[in-house]
Image 1: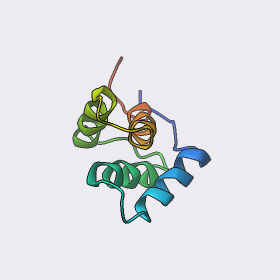
Image 2: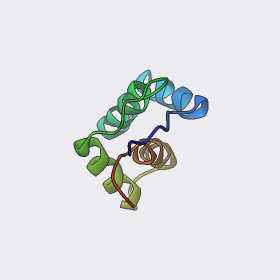
Image 3: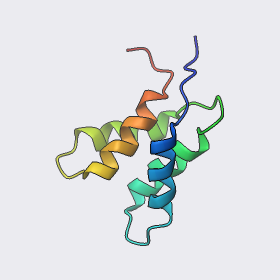
Image 4: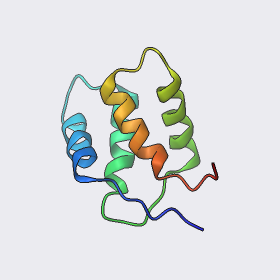
Length: 81
């Protein structure tokens, strides 16, 4: 069974703003790119991005933007809970 979730409009908007932000971190841009790539498609999160997103969610150093993008990306994973 594949995950049919897609990036929602709020997450897509955040991802677009993040990619356009010169001050955004590399991890934020990576997560934002993945989220946008999954917007309106049946694409799912790759293993490498899923690992980055999981690490970001567990890190105390991650800010709310990073965690929001990471949560969106992880929710579109095919990994079984």
